[in-house]
Length: 180
Length: 180
Image (cartoon, rainbow over all chains, first blue to last red):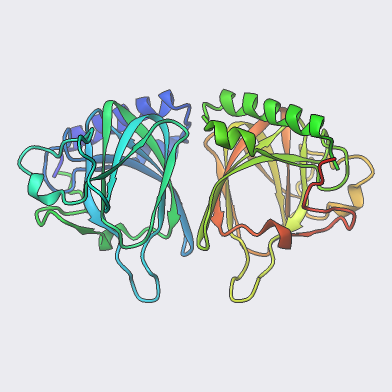
């Protein structure tokens, strides 16, 4: 749950990060930047700002903004009917992002989960993405990510996005943000 | 057909345009920028520079560069087997691009086809894209585009790309560039 004021401030801040990455949004897009607090009401630590450019029945493209050390919590995109689940490529455009997927845990990872939520972060194989670097996540694969000290702008290229079906490891998370 | 020298020069020039759009490529990507002359050997007028970020069996993302007034010639992406054909969204990142699709012909279009190739440009409904503006082209739909006086950088978000199956209106065009 976030307030209208928090929503407006986070949108403005996201626009500043996008601008640092050289990314231009139309006025209409600026008004519909999504601010996700994942229901924890702690946007600075658990949250994501995003703009969806296109999302058809076949493919999708978004821009993601993470404030410094902001974390998108662990989740996966499950199969839905005949769809095997969303396949995503994350491409870092600006800043630095630490992405975690299943595999050999990285001994000294760059990221730390938000305080108190540690048990809900279970995959620890780290991929560091700097501008121009990217990684493709197969369908139905647990993943989470956190920005470095400066924040990050990340392009997401994917199959159809159905955020409402995402499955989060943390049972307290609600994907759809309530604005009060 | 282009020379190795032309390829290297066009890649370097494309990198300069990408840089103006704030877009960073890895060294590996810089080395595989594709330069397409469409077999006409007149790259300045008919041509396209592109880098494919990802192209899986489900979706694809590329960055396209057009030099000033450079034209990507008229073509469509036909159905292949159970695939209805490639669906593409073009998003202008830098510069200006004039996109033409079927529909009411625009009375005074911004673009002119390359000299001598005019008969092979048959769709004239114009969409002008400036930074932040985008347009989605359905599968199997004729389209062509030309950059404005300053050139253009355009992101392409699409379903799987199979360039070798593209159907061009101009019978002299060969999609796969030969480098000599």
